[in-house]
Image 1 (cartoon, rainbow, N blue to C red):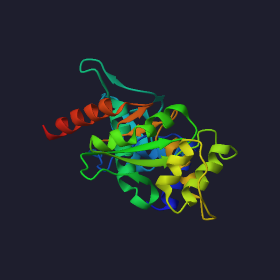
Image 2: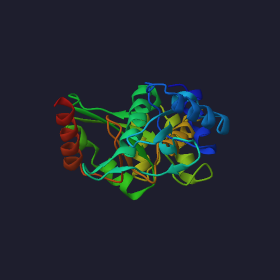
Image 3: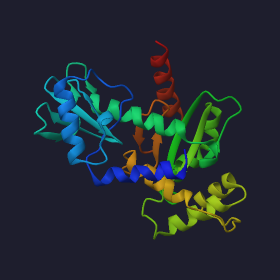
Image 4: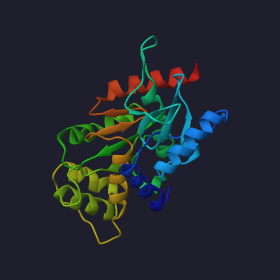
Amino acid sequence: MSRTTLLSYSLLTVCLMAVSSPVFAADSAELQAVRAKINAMFDQIGPENVDESPVDGWYTVHKGSIVAYVSADGRYLLQGDMIDLDNQVNLTEQTRNVTRREVMSALEDDQTIIFSPADVKHRVTVFTDVDCTYCRKLHSQIDEYLAAGIEVRYLLYPRNGPASQSWSTSEDVWCARDRNLALTAAKMGREFDSQKCDASTISDHYTLGQNVGLTGTPAIVFEDGTLVSGYLPPATLASRLQLIQQGAAN
């Protein structure tokens, strides 16, 4: 994914947002009318971002990480999670997962800092702040994650923003010749060698994190798009990833 693509997600915060579906539902006259009305009201919402919803009389408006619903007459808009009580499933979060999965899978290796085991069984993407306590705890156990066959792809997310010391440190990590060693040193509060470079990738990571729904760090994104906010011990993470893998196989 190019920097332009990453930054394009920042447009999501200025208007109605939600998760896109690659397939159009049947184009009924009602659906076409709702699409036209929403598109007229929100420039960034195209016809492809309005689709059927699980509830009759409502349509899903989807672009980005936030999902909303519009009534069939195009008059009422609801923004929030839709829960299937019978099956105890968050339908809105499932939709968000689709977008997160697509965005994470589009990231190139050179846009992340990768710690990879010899035998990769699972892959996760972790938004990390070099200074947060639980980010440091997670990284202090990186060898245990690797031993469990978990590849960790780091994205740098200085949670206090561009003016923070964490942001400056993150830029230094990105500009280091050996980013893996630099990241480990930064998380231990140690000095490391760096150099001048184009560190705009930090801004890209930060924007991406905001637009996939981060509420804090560390934030772990599984291959299926599931987002976990907070630290998970190696054994717990391995167990959860195994369950997801087994479910996908069934």
